[in-house]
Image (cartoon, rainbow, N blue to C red):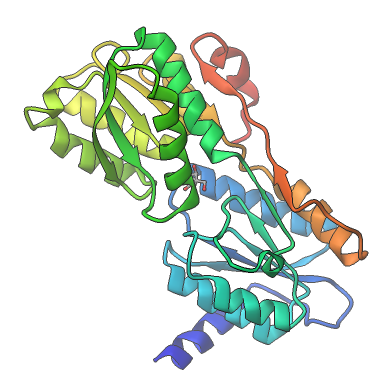
Length: 314
Ligand code: AHR
């Protein structure tokens, strides 16, 4: 069964590419997590466009939010002898064996967006992505300022075990720790998707405790947009009865901020293709690259979103 899946995935991966390793063009395997959010599709587009622009042969695999699919894709890329691998790991743990195989095959792995927990840091060359803990802290700071340090909060968490879910929760918790009247009264994973965000919050809003919340903190914009729908459906006015804060900064979230329903979105920039390929090309030339490259982001609310909306790229 496993071999059949591996072969199938291999076929899918090969079908996306036209150059063979050793044929002159550089080949990179991109084991993407899925298409769970607007952020993710913008991230995929950015990396694919940059590969095409620079003449790299990109082999793409969509793991559909499953770690086993991502690991199979990595094994396929290793078997094909690609020149490098781009990996946004879906969760933090469980990648060590396959990363060891990549290292043994001499294939550099560039982690993008999310990081992994490994005992041997030499298993990846660098990690390019945002500071998720800081994003959570910024969301908390904005909410504290906006509510005067008083809020009963429902938290929509990202995928269980994923670095952004773990770190954004940690950052937010540390940000509200100094405010005794800010309490997270409920938290549930909604897998970074709009549909699950809506479904989870809607069920909670119908409980006695849910009727008492005054704020929602969502680990990404898609879940926040689902939360806005859930609030509207139970007759609570987002932006008036309940303040919603989230992370990503996608266009639909900007529009919701401009409309007054979403309070704030903390930016996490998915447009990292140019940076990733700068790094891949440096690695190809044998140059040293930094172990950690932090991508910057802003904070958008009613005070600055209208100005930023017309040029929003994702
Ligand atoms: O890892 C980044 C997160 O993953 C983004 O916040 C979210 O939208 C995506 O699915």
